[in-house]
Image (cartoon, rainbow, N blue to C red; front, side, top):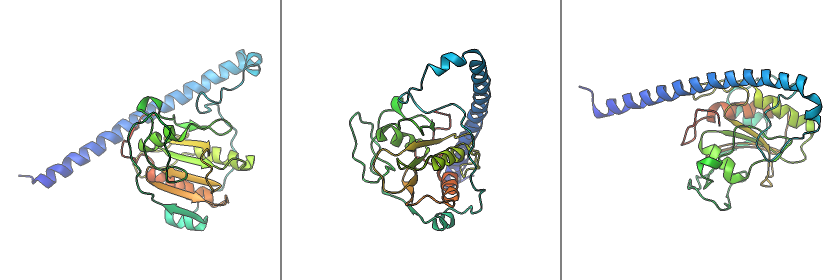
Length: 243
């Protein structure tokens, strides 16, 4: 007869397998949506090109979903997070959890950029996506995204455009994750200009974790890759569907 501990472990494994199955199904759905989006975008380009030129993007509506030209970035060489962070002169920290309540007021976070704390209700959580070139959501919205297991890549305003474009390439780069499912085309990730006056040029955050890179260099890419691989979907409230 199985012990209580064995039964508890069995249920844990069943829950993990169920989450991974749900994540895989969500990923297949996301790929179908991406293909459909490309087809629709092509039709719009052919049919209403002139009208589109008169439009203009609403920077406050959400992340940019239009395909961006790829700017080359160095291939991955260092896979271990601690080694990659050291090589890039980035600092890896694990700030204390500051809270997890739902609020409708502004929150003063102790870490910069924020890595945890009170945040907006679920209906206002920041969507996955690329906010570069637009307006980043308020911290109270993207902190909730961290709780859902998202990775947020932020860059200091004024960063050279070439570096921003390279971050977009990194954002869309497919990669394995320690959670067990792939990150594809920016899934489970947000890329944005920082709006908390952070000191590093580039930072990546997860719930309770931060990678801060004072200076952006070519080794920074491996550090962010390894950070995303380890911490994606590791938040206390894992949401495996695209948001």
